[in-house]
Amino acid sequence: SMKSKTRLGDGLLVASLENYSPVSKIGVFVKAGSRYETAENLGVTHILRLASNLTTKGASAFRICHGLEAVGASLSVTSSREHMVYSLDCLRDDFDGVTEYLINVTTAPDFRPWELSDLLPRVKIDKAVADQSPQIGVLEKLHEAAYKNALSNSLYCPDHMVGKISVDHLQQFFANNYTSARMALVGLGVSHAALMKVGEQFFSTHTGAAAPGAVYRGGELRVQSGGGLVHALLACEGAAAGSAEANAFSVLQRVLGVGPHVKRGSNITSKLSQGITKATAQPFDVSATAFSATYSDSGLFGVYIISQADSVINAAMAQVIAVAEGRLTADDLTRAKTQLMADYLMSLESSEGLLEELGVQVLSSGTYSSPQTVTQSIDSVTSSDVVKAAKKFVESKKTMSCYGHLANTPFVDEL
Amino acid sequence: MSSTVCPRLSPAGSATSRLLVGFRKWYYNACGFNKLGLMRDDTINEDSDVKEAIRRLPEQVYNDRMFRLKRALDLSMKQQILPKDQWTKYEEDVYYLEPYLEEVIHERKEKEEWAKN
Image (cartoon, rainbow over all chains, first blue to last red; front, side, top):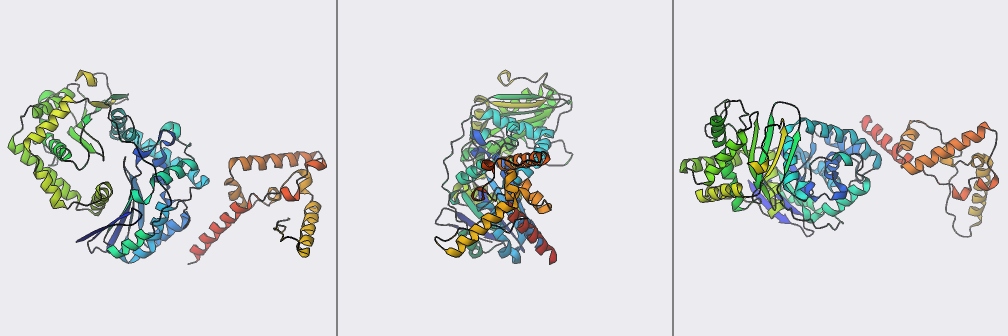
């Protein structure tokens, strides 16, 4: 497979990987995630995520939808806290016909007021579905508690902004963030020359605005809700994506355990699971897992526990403290490194995973590291790196978010 | 009704265009809806395209339209007209609905074109 990468004059990065697949997958990655929202336009990325099929200057909403459907292509948008990703799948032969829709959606949306107000029910449905899921709730609350700005913004539109995001908010956010310098055009199964031609049509007259760095503060948010379970997520500030420390945290995550690798198995290799089994006889969710999230300038690392008992969190902490005190065998380390490498390589097996990895790397660092480079850097993590990472977790200011029946759940300063 | 009458920027000093504008003004006043304080687009027949275009009006424009319609209905009930200084003038008449209506018709035609193939 051939990889090519160029940076166009206006700052747009174009990268392609020719895998001779009959299906082409093109993604536009924009640095326009929820961290770039300001206090006045909270929730604008949620609306933008839903607004990809609306009328643009070059094509009406009707034409985008029917044009794509006529050739069996699909256009979808996902967004994270850092990036907004527009991905277009089509058959290789139809590539030339459908790229105009992608270009229109990412550079020239019209934002018509009546189309935006028609989006309101979809925003409400998204929020209702998210409210039903304790996992999403606990993750959003963790970020809200952990950071003072940027990364504390939720992926969902806050209640007080539903219906109040106006055309001006959208246009301003668009002008500040959808500039060519903040975008990367990535293609799988396309020739680099064809992709470059598409990239040249991504002219952008917007100037863009600088964004603040994320500041970690550490805090606690608890949400009482019904039900018999407690979802608790306890984290500390980790490392930024791509750094050596981030690799150490990822290996530590695998040492502690990320869920059973054998279906219906007893999760012997997970230190967290084993430690907690000894601590409590009550059933707890087997996905007492280590949690890790990395962003361009910060990260979070911790443990995520779903349980009924109250001593589970302390038992989980005890496991991490054990690693911090150096109780880490060479076998554990090798096993964790192998699992991490296997997970990483397996994620690249699917075209979605590969496109995402390619896009995020190209956009964040301007280059793409081959899987061999990544696995080598994972292999170079030593036992002392992992112990240092665990020590950092034990000693630094922690953040906790819990959700559920919290009568017996300890507070973060009691741990 | 009078949807064929439209303002046109007359080139300076052309005799024919001054005649045409004069005729248009006379026709506008002869129609008589300006005596009830209405604008041309207030009187347009509401078919489905027009209804969709009205739905898309910005709030302020929509509220003004509703006010003028209510006032005209009230006057009509009382068999009165406005005093002459409050009649809508030819120069002040804004065809506010036209851009929205054109867009709606364009979209409908696009759908019909697509359905043909």
